[in-house]
Every structure is written in C-alpha cells, then in structure tokens.
Image (cartoon, rainbow, N blue to C red; front, side, top):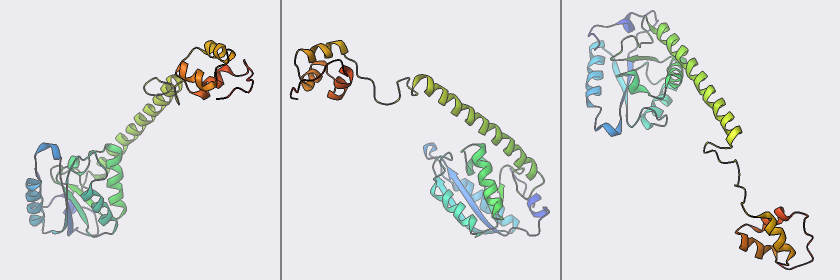
Length: 222
C-alpha cells in the first residue's frame, strides 16, 4: 500500500504539480465484485495529496477488452486534456490486454501530456524516479511480444500452406467425391447432366467438369 506522504510524483522533476485527477475503476463481471473499495482508497489518497478529482471512469468487464465504455471515454478525454493525472488502483485494473497494448496506452497518455500512476504499485508512476525503468521494461517485453506474435503468424501461414486451413481441410470448396469414370459411362448411355448429377449426388457443374471432353454431347436435353 502507498504511504500517505507525497511520493515521487510531487517531487518529480516536472514544471507542474498535477492537480486535476481522473480515477479509473474496474472489476471483472464474473467475480461478483464492485468498485467501492477502489473508489474509497483512491479518493482518500487524492484528498491527502490535495488533488482535485475531475472525473471518475468505471467499467465492470474484463480488462482484456479494448472496447470498454469507461476506458474509451477515458482515452477520449485524455486527448482533450480534461485532467492532468490518471490514477488507477493497479496496472491490471487499467488494462489486461498485454504488454504491447499497455505500453501503447501509457505512451498515448504521455503524448497528450497526461501523467499516470498506480495506487498500489508506486514504481508505476510517470513522474517518479522509476518511470524510465518501467517504460524500458515494458518496451522490452512488448518487443518480445511482437516477436512471438510474428512467430505465431508465420507458423500459421506455414500450416495453412501445408494443410489448407487450421482444421487441415483444403482451402475453398471441398472437392466433390464421386466415380468420374461412372459419370462418363452414364453420359455415354444417354443420361442428361442433371440425371447423372442426381444419381452420383454431385452438382451438374462437377459432373460436366469431370467428364470434360471425354464425351461429346449430342444435343441431349437437361
């Protein structure tokens, strides 16, 4: 838990001390939890720091979803600089989309001059002494994540080339299975394309392709 005294954020080498604060609260829907505990602790912390809470954003869904309503509003308002600092209870409350996405969001906030801070993880503080270390670590992990994604994509392409699809079935429409020599024989016996198709449980187009030029039609009806 954070100490009550002002930490590195207030003492950071920055030309301003964040005053307008936004809170982000999130719980997963399947845990029968609410955000009351997070809200209480974050509000009390802001009060001790003398910060003004400008906005509170809340989501009750998985942090792995980028389309969370509260989260999307948060990003939109950050781009409009409606507040100076985003405070969340823990990084996994902010997002659980993976290291690459986490780094992207933090850099997005930083790009608009918005600071960010985790309440329970004092080292995750964009105005703190470990900021560069955290960003460097996230960037390194994100690079590894990109490599793993690239490897999975290449493996998938190689498998698709070898087997057609993930299931191993050929890409495109399955090839019709029927006795092609019998199709030719039935055609020679005078059956129409439609009659042969029904008898062999295949489409007319498949029968015609199978027969090809082996038999020349003599104007028989369909």
